[in-house]
Length: 267
Ligand code: NAP
Image (cartoon, rainbow, N blue to C red; front, side, top):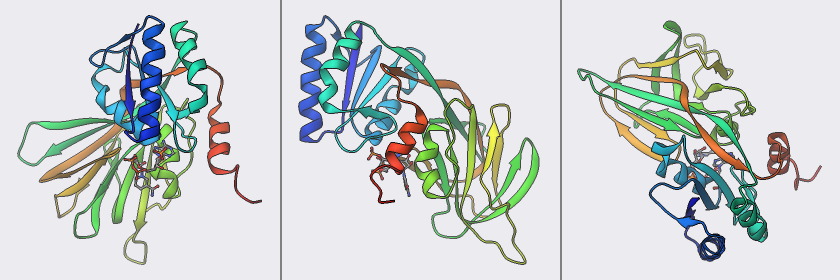
């Protein structure tokens, strides 16, 4: 079995990376950064996002596991002092693989046949660099609304606890194959109107955003920020691909939500 390690690159994460590498090699596993079977991410959820994008072209064969060297994460749910236990479970192959849905974003450009397609583990957001974002929102080919505001966020279920949650979107269990469109500060008055609530789309639905005037947009795909010029449309749907996580013990999603957002706060 082959493994790779992604570190956040701080002292604690690097030290843990070296220990994990030694232990796993001692157990007969091969360090292979090109085509690993399992990828250990050491740092936080942000580190796991980097690991995901590094191996996004090998999703059907790679399983991810996250160790947090800061606070408990949604993807990084192992503690540093559990490293020995984790290594033994990896070496003995004592784990299940669970799959979470991903978001596919396809950007079409004016006058071009070529488009850009991305996979997101958390979300894709769209903002206008200088002016208010104005976009027509189509659901399954039918006009739904004209959005005016700061931006729009389309998130995966596992990304629903990230930027989406800060925007007031719902937390969605990753067993649901869905994507969620959440507004950022929409303009709503006598003239302009949007639905206001987040929309949850099932796997067989598509959402297409079409610029009304300005066609240059800042589009994010997880931690990646890119300015796209002359955008004709952006199409979002649940991706065919899934991300695979190695699960060594039960840690239910709602418990992670509780431990991350409720526990530790004064009642
Ligand atoms: P960052 O600004 O350094 O970190 C953003 C925070 O989001 C970190 O605390 C990170 O956890 C946390 N996070 C990432 N994925 C999460 C998830 N699925 N559920 C709950 N929390 C999560 O940026 P980054 O490390 O490059 O990560 C990019 C992500 O930042 C984006 O995908 C977006 O979701 C998030 N973001 C959030 C806001 C907001 O909440 N207002 C604004 C912009 C971007 P760790 O500390 O464990 O890494």
